[in-house]
Image (cartoon, rainbow over all chains, first blue to last red; front, side, top):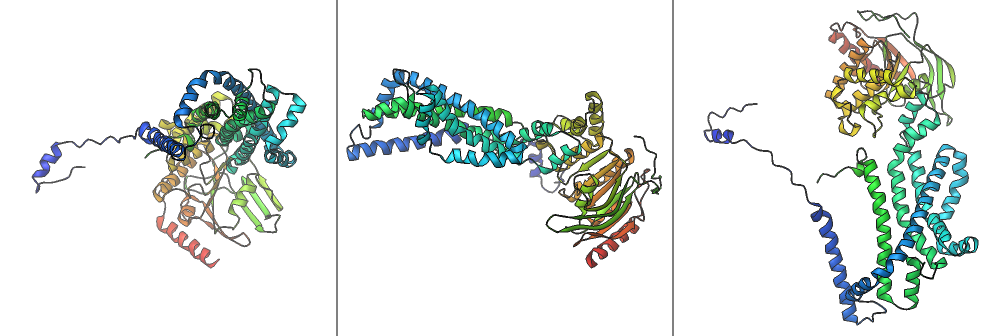
Length: 287
Length: 257
């Protein structure tokens, strides 16, 4: 639309200069995500060093950040093998929990009777302290990887089952009716509607389970840990604790965190890929 | 199933062979709530019947029973077609599927061969003006466009009877008017009957050959009003004064109810 500006000669100049839309500046990932995290780490490390210096803490009680860095440097090679063992146990436990949890949720969503019969025991499974059950697993399955995988799966199965069930039961009622009106059998409703609709909750369950599975594997190793160079990070942590090798213990804890971060990152990556086209949680945010 | 054209160009309706009949239909829920007291109504082939009334008067219960989604406590519903479509208040689209895939959905679930449903869906998408958005996801559409996709899905199966439960209630006034015109255009080109639930008196009057005015507690028919200037297949100009007068009458009836 043209605007008449006959009485305002200065406007001619304005019209001659086209106004270009200013390109919205996207805040960089470094500024929004990396800098705050690095800033927080610097503050924590400074406080840590201050506590060690001011109170003269002995290394076996609280090593300084420098002691810690040195331990990481010297122990890094020794931690690779235990990390791989823990990783194997945790990932197998996670896979087992994902399959069992998903199938259990499918059965519970399909038949109310199954849900009423099974769900209380799933909750019970979650409330039992895992450290108390682990010795029982050692008695049953012996001291080794199998026990640690089962402990890991046991702790990780509940978030998968509970979140999947919640998702399957939250399907839009109108969509369910639409499927029913079209004469779609229950099996089609389940796999064409309920499961895809529940995907965000299923993936949330898997994300929670990914972290839990590493905790489960390490707890299993505390109790059933294998020695002779085949032990995982749980075994290394126990050994370091008993020998008061605190800086090395810190390094092993960091290695355990890395194992968790890898599996968490993989699940988050899959989640982003599966949901990026349609779900609010995976859409880019506008600031 | 082919049908004759029971609604003449002038809007006259042949009621000798109704597509659906409600005979003394009642619905009482298990908690004792009486949703619908004896309800008698016929809907002719090609006729649009608007149902208007306050919340809780049983409008949705009636069309849910007609669609077979809920059972009547007593009475009889005679439906002479299985070619139904249900349009909800929300577009009710699968968020992870494209417009085309959503529009094809019901036909796919009914086992319509791929080529046939592709053609029908493409035609329906063109009809509702979403040709350029076939591959778009629901989140990429506006509210009105989503509702059009929902309408396209409904007409893809060439339904004889459309159950429409406040389909335009969530839209802004401008989009709502456009969608009403869109629906009438679809009705002219596709030979279907419709039971159209709305809270809007002007909408009920604009769309219906008859307007069923209902009241609540318990849900019942207060009055069935023939439109003085119903929609016609040849899109003849309508007597807006007479329609406005009907709207005023319905408004008074609802206030007195």
